Structure formats: structure tokens, C-alpha cells
Image (tube, rainbow, N blue to C red; front, side):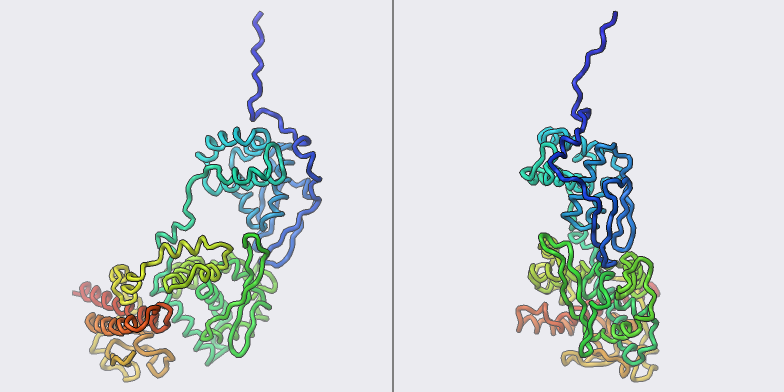
Length: 508
């Protein structure tokens, strides 16, 4: 007779998960779980929580489903304890993000079984072989969140002494500030100028004719202000409620919810908006009661849109105004980089971003130019700005045509005492413009530059001499609004000169 095959001892993954033994020191699972949705400003309740197989979470006004019905019964019990622990420690959006990263990973159940049965040293060997080499940084982060819950709940061999051990488990390297380092998330200064010009013009139009602008256009302008000036994310913009906006003496103040602060409860900060843009905010607030809130938006949301709609409307409006698609997050990064370049401290940038740590602020300082390079940029000598040679977005005008226009449309002025004329035409007429001539013309949507490169190069060179005077009398000129306006004008004049040269080469 053949001898029976020898019985091998079970491998770690074959060890049964003795749930009762692992969890006998813990109280029963809560029958209901409550969590808060900041966009809808309400608490939601997961009823009969111990019985769920598919978890539906309402986050930022949207319902997100997470199906873990493929888990075995014992593993599902353990996982329910993990989810309950996560809800007690982090916000619902983070929980949903972790669940999304755990979903569709073939060994998500295996992770729970391994963590339940192996010692930390044994588990680390399995982790290095299976997780660190096969999963993305985000998925590894979600698995580490599960292990931290094991430590807090004291499941298996894990306890709070192993929290640092879990953090030290190797993961694929990821530079979360790669876009900042590469500069790909920064909105070019000429696109920022187009946006501010559009907001300026709308504010003037609204002040003179409040009923002239459509409600949607006013809403777009309010959203663009929050993204451009305050650097708010779409979820923060969507979370601004009716009673968060106050108006006093023609000025507008916005109260913003600051959440996800490490070891801090959510709190509010108040920011004042640019006074020149108050007109369209005041008019939108007056007409807002007639607006129908969008689907999934909080009834008291000031703009009446959920985060996804905020992001789409913002990006579409920016593309229409500038010809390029830039997101709210791009403007957030650009605003923070402007602060770093202007000499703001780490604490000031951290406060602007409403971050709990200064990690992101450090990234902007790493990407910020040295002082000498900043001076070169201010004088329009940076290679970045010299290399710009894009097609003129509003066309150009020849000298003969310019001389036939009414005097009011022929631009002239004396910025900083330097007489400048003949640079181009104003479609509106200088008498209708509320801005400084010359300094505000370059980059303005109503400006038709003269098709003569030396004229614009001479303007840039004359203004560089003014910059030298600034540098001679002040050591901290970056924070000066006049200095910033000079920098923008020099860059724009150089750009127009390059465009005129390219235009002549093409026509020749």
C-alpha cells in the first residue's frame, strides 16, 4: 500500500483567523457610525453598521460606494473594526480615499490575514516581497493605515509600540511636490494678467450697470476670485456658506473652514477680498436668492455648486479668458510661489495655504529663485521671459492705422516720470480706462500694440532704469506693489517686442 502523503504544517496564510480570540478584548462594534460632510454641512449616519457589505459614503456632496462583499466572513469582521477606528481618527474623505486604494487589490484580504497571524518581523518580510515591490505609494499608504488601526486596537501581535515600525515599512518613493519642483503647475504671468484684467473690467461694468452682467458670469467671477486671490481648493470654495460672506463699508470678507489640521479640530479663518472686485460680489449676493442650487450642493452654499462643478466652471472660465486650461490648484500653487518669491516667511505661506505643517511651504522656497535671479526677473532679463515668443492674442496695429485713430485711442503717458507714447491703441479709449496708462496697457485685453519691436524694447529698457533706482534705495523691493507692476510691464513689453519681431518675420 502506498503511504499517505505527509501532512505539512500550515503556512502562515493558512493559519485560521481566530476572530473571537483576536477581538475578545474589544467592545462590540457600534450599531451606527456617524461622520461629517463639510460641503453639505451635515452629519450622516451608517445604520446597522455591523451588517453592511457595501459601504456608501456621502463625501463632498457625492455618494461613493465601496464594496467589500468578497471578503470572507471572519476577515470582514476584522475589517469592520478597522473602518470604525479610521472614522474615529480621520475625516470621512480620507477614509473613503483609503478604501478606494484598498479596493480592487487582489491581496487586500491577504494583508488582513497576514497582519492578523504573523509577528511584525515575519510580516515585514512578506511586506517587502509583496507590497513594496508591487503596489503604488498610495496603495501602500492605505495598507499602512490598516496596520495603524491594528496597532491602536491591539489586534494580533500589534500594539501602539509598533506605530513607528509601520511608518518605517518601505514604500515606493514619491515626490508629492514634483509638479512644484518642475514648475509645471505655475500659471504664466501673462495668463494671470488676462484673468485680473477680466475681473477688473467686470467690476467696473458691474459698478456702473449692476443689472448688466448675467448671474452665471457673476458667479464665475466670485469663484475665480476665491481661487486666484485666496488660493482655495474647489472643496473649500464649495464649502463657503451664505453666512460666511459678510460685507461692510463696500468691502467683502469671506470666512473659510480650515479642516484636516494635524492634532487640531476644524476652525475658521477670515480673509478680505480685493476691494476693487467688491462690486460683482455685492451684486451676486443681492441676486443670489433667485439662484437654484446645483445638484449635490448644500442649500446654503454661497455659489450653489458642489466641488466638481466648481472645478469645471472655474477651469472652463479660465480657458475662455486666457486661452489656456488652468485649474484652481494651479492658481493655488502660483499664489504660494508668488509669496515665496516676494520674501514671505514659511509661517506666512503655511498660513496662506491653511496647512497644519510647513512641508509644502518648504517646497515653494526650494523652487524659488535666488535673490539675484529674482532681480533679473524683475528687470525682464530672465531667460524664462526672454524665451517667450507666443502669437499675439489680440493682434497688432501698424503705425499708419494708429495715426488715423482718435487721439483718445492713441496711448500715451509718463509712468515714473518717463514720457512714453506711440506704443499702440486702446479699443476703449484712455478716457474710459480707470487704470494707469502704459503700465496697465501691456497685457490688457483692450490693448492693440504697435507692430514695431524697437518701440516696445525701448519701453522695457526705460523701465529697467526705474528698477535700478528701486534697487538702489530699498533692499526689500519684492513686496512693493509698484515694483511688482514694473516687473509685469517689463515682461509684457519684452513679450510684445518678441511677438512683433516674429510677426514681421512671418509676413516677410
